[in-house]
Length: 93
Image (cartoon, rainbow, N blue to C red; front, side, top):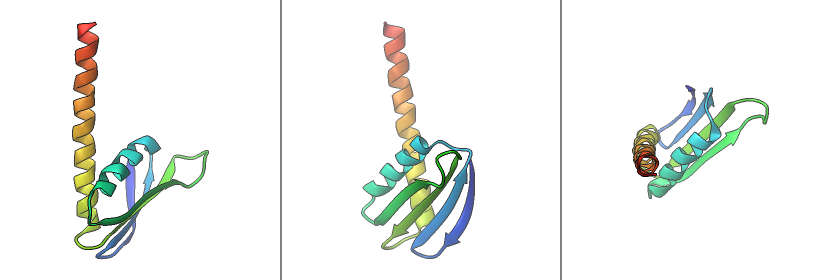
């Protein structure tokens, strides 16, 4: 995954993301929207034939990049828990 910072201010961040999958970005978006300081978190695919995405995050206070970092960490932890659950079911079968 490649990430390029397109726009940054104290309450808004716009990222261009390539070499990723939109489902991964949706998980991060979901985690972002759980935070009450996040006013908006959106992901769009720039074109259906490319793997180029844009993510925008707006916060009411705080640093939006810090919120993205927290959401990404939470998404990774959730994915690890899911992986362990799947592996335990496969071994038990």
